[in-house]
Length: 165
Image 1: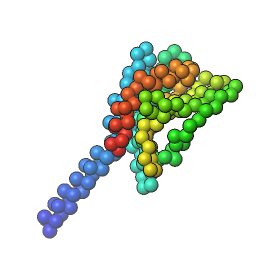
Image 2: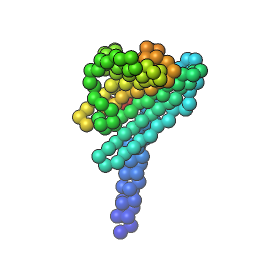
Image 3: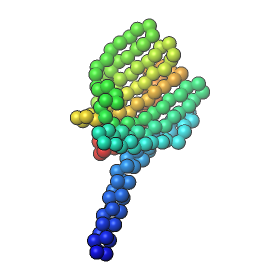
Image 4: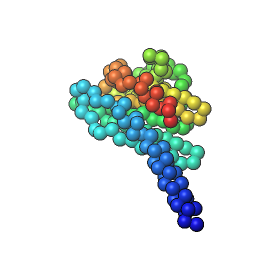
């Protein structure tokens, strides 16, 4: 009986250890949120949200420079979290959106011209039912400046890390 109890305890410990390793996916993404020259940045943070039927992993960091603010986030999750890679081209007096290919990645840029806010979405990986994205949301700068800043991050490294999960 003692041998069975000991074996069960060992199996539970191994399961808990492996579950803990699996639950720490976001920590591998934190180093991709690099320092930006001339910008102050908070410490990168993340979360693994795992429940039956839905998994989401995020790593994010907030950057400030004067009246400008950027939030950079790597996200792995359900395809429903963000619209798929749809080619978008729109320009009005208040809103500008487009999708373009940059260094082999589909990139969607959105700018609210009235509030000088927007986002850049880089599609890193897409599989059936899930995807991985690098998202930069910005305030106080235009889409061209935000895109140049987004390019300072290593999208290929992000892709490699997100593909592993």
